[in-house]
Image 1 (cartoon, rainbow, N blue to C red):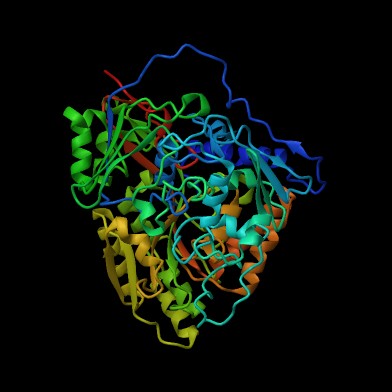
Image 2 (image 1 turned 60 degrees about the vertical axis):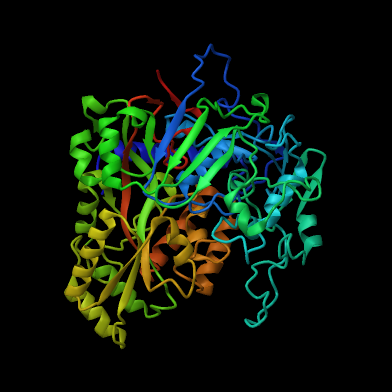
Length: 607
């Protein structure tokens, strides 16, 4: 059940916002005439006299030793998308910066002049670029650069781990190769990307440029495609038009070219390393209505122990007064900083936040390595979810989850019954080892020994111990496998390196369950850690994506969420609140709803 009325209030605001947006994008059974979806009221605010907050350095403290990825086609974790989207990577459309979730989850034009023009059946979308767009060397950012960036998504032999909506939605044939020994059998599309060039003509038909206007032809109706282009559709310098701005493929992730207000000055990975962003003098503020670009420098400091980080920010002395946390407050410090799960105490008012984040936490299970459904059900039944939640902070951690669709998606959420009757009887929050043993007996096969992959932190080390103990009561042997946080996803996406199950969290890429169910449980979705290949499920996802009626689509997502839980593709743990804080001389400090992140594009330092 929800933890509080305020928790529900935030969820309902988020969900209602999407219903209105979908209706505006043509989400009905009767196609509307071709229209231009113009910018919303937050896009061009009335002129106001602003205080000049320019100058200074904001420090970002993180336990990670590197970013998962800073390639515009590979980056795919929420805080990273928010940070780089505010500093060096722009997209055709972006979200509005506002503390109110309903406003913040509204689209506005970014590189594009507005939020796009859809055909009557939503199978074609066009966007026109603004004037004055440039790369960091001062050369013009063109329509061909956006097209080239999108094309890189298809080179999934080298561009891995990022969003694959382009592959899923663009009107390009699927890869016909079925021979696993063929070196091209791993490609998801008949177009192999710009480095190989196979299928280039198909891509050029699906993505075309006419001056400053780029048009995408889709293989199905996608009413919210203008949300899609916020992810993985960012430009990369087209080698033909920018021969000096080299796309070095694998190395591009270490030094992408900037089209935002900052550029990379230094990127040193490892404990004690830094990412330093300095001003991009070629950026034209007149071409960018979104990013304030107040600080002169952003400095990310890697490899800081999470407990030390908390103490430094609590003290807020020296440079730490200008610092923010790239992570969460440690559970043992929550009662020091907050009077209750929503309210900072007086000493931290204005610099500590606790809010309903976008993420559902869960354990993925590799359905190839744990192929017996009864075994997966036994794992879910055995887990002491209440102890996991208590370890994360109890009430501060949020509510226990029952699926991967979170209540912040409004009418697309429905209770799955996972812990009440989905397996034939109720499952207590503390787990039921005897019921788990019965499920193993019913499976007809002995339960295999398991290894649990997780990105190592002190809190997750404790979580591993809880998991091992609760599974052990059911006779299930688990070996924890801690992985450095910055290396985690690179390892668990490797079929050979990944083990039977592991930790994960997921938030919708935009306010629609299409960005939850598809990505998590289909190969085309790009985040299929559970290695799901059930044909009926994959077809159900495709049917839901093609449904333009919002109510009908919402019911389809609900049903698929329930089916995924019945088959235990994942074990849900919490629908989370998250708490984080910053130093005394950084503002504004609130959780920005689209990514559950800091509002990087409007942050500044105070005297």
